[in-house]
Length: 411
Ligand code: ADP
Image (cartoon, rainbow, N blue to C red; front, side, top):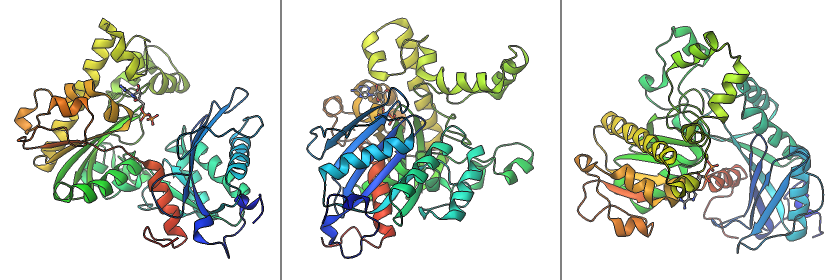
């Protein structure tokens, strides 16, 4: 095989051990990616292009965590960023053929309940959904278009953050608005579905007795949400129509009385762009802390009145959501933490679990400090766990499945 095989126009004739799957997550100014082999959970390489534009940077590392020197070139657009990523991978893995590319797509609307192979019809549908997620969907689509150009003839698989929640009960799918809005698609979609899908699969593997019951997953990262999962299915989620609802996030407001927006419009005379900027980029942890930081680590270290009130609010909203989700399911068997904060912050986990003995939640402080998989105390009625999430792997699995490669395929 030649050095340009990573641009693989086809995988015909390639042995599975030469075949790779690319998982892409194209955000507004970033492109996260991971290349997986035909089998297994360890990526051959992972990386991220940030601040795509004149100041763009690219970091990439191999399976051992060692940095891979990026190919030269300016990261001026998603297309050029992807071209540089491909050139870098080509040099690092000259024999690898990309058999399918999986994409994280924020919105799958009311119809997509599973990953789908992208064709012109799908692209058309996805672009109509851009009005529901104007800040994310167009970037996801540029990632798909760029990959289509870079890998002609290679299957592109769209994996939706909404799909996991699509079977939610009607009461959790509606807003109490005139019903025509529901018909138009103004519904509670819920997001972070790829993460919840991964956690559900992982829990079914490591704790099937819990997954058969009532589980609340708290995905606490820069974006944060919670999901009530009853017998493996999403029955309630904290995010709704957009990725703004529910918990406060790094810079997003979380649950907000819509009257506040009317106040901004009527009294402050702000326009929608200004309001969008406030709700998406200036609120959440950043807003609560008076501009101190959107980053939980910084807030935990700060130890100031501003950081205290911010953490108090974050914890309070999680506890409130947890109570509501337990009520919806008639109880709770397990609480699972994931995401950058959920996986790493012992302070937040401890604070969330405080005073929840009435729910059977009681953590073992030693296990929590070690970030063990099970952090609840031995005799607690509710199991509290940390399960690191892997959205990239869910995407890679969908890409493998699309070309008929089962998880257990021999290489
Ligand atoms: P994203 O939603 O962008 O994927 P992550 O899941 O990476 O975000 O989560 C980022 C958040 O995790 C940040 O607020 C960061 O401060 C927080 N975080 C990461 N490590 C720690 C830690 N050791 N202690 C507290 N917070 C942490």
